[in-house]
Length: 338
Image 1: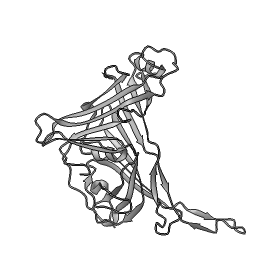
Image 2: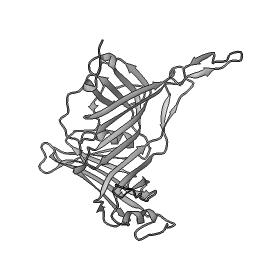
Image 3: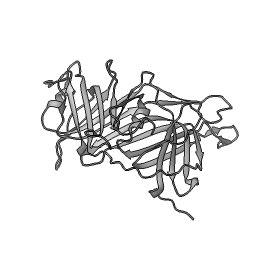
Image 4: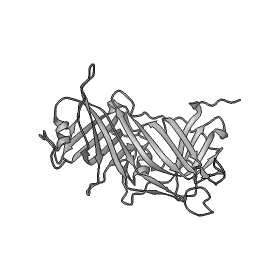
């Protein structure tokens, strides 16, 4: 009897050109912490008079989900591009490539073939065709490694795939000490939030599964459609003065609720003290910019043996000169999907 452990686990993937056609893996998640997939048969009860219980249970459409959580590295640029839809590549030099992900005007995220499992046996592996990223969550917390997690909705799982575990990727994840968080109101200069303890945000594509009466599809959903995207997060800040609490009220100097709320820009920058191979002066970096954000609520709690902090939820929205969020990562990769 074989017992499987996470030692042989992996998460690899490839970008599809069309739904319904799986592709071989072309890239790996360097430092996955967890990976999970499930299929729900959406059982339909067949009721009948004369019976106290259902006469039968028949399968509905196959609801296929997968997700993973990983430490964020400079090689994880693909997932921001997949979830946001618009991908821009700029060659900075022979050694440095800039990958920029923004909200696509068509609001379409990518379609992925997702592979996960453990290396010891093909029976402990699965390939899921037609996955689309439903959400991505970014978390930076003081004293910890920066993480991200992705939830996907898939179409067709295939058990016992021959996919193999990739070689170890020699890249360092970002840590809290690599970065800063800045914010500003209107056209003011960006100012560092020195006493911030955590920032997290989720890009939610609000995907919807669309099954059809179509024998060729069988129980697999015909299409996975994307509804309006939402971007929301939260900052935890140690209390120092009323600045950010006043921003919640309406703007600088506001001590009571105003009829309008200030528009705020939030800037997260991570840069390792590690040169990109072959580059003379460019380090690995990740830059996240939300040009238009509004604070949803504020306040603080006073308790015994507690540091006074307050949590500020925020939401990003459309900006005509930019997009609701731009994620820029610099590394030495040649192209997307690697």
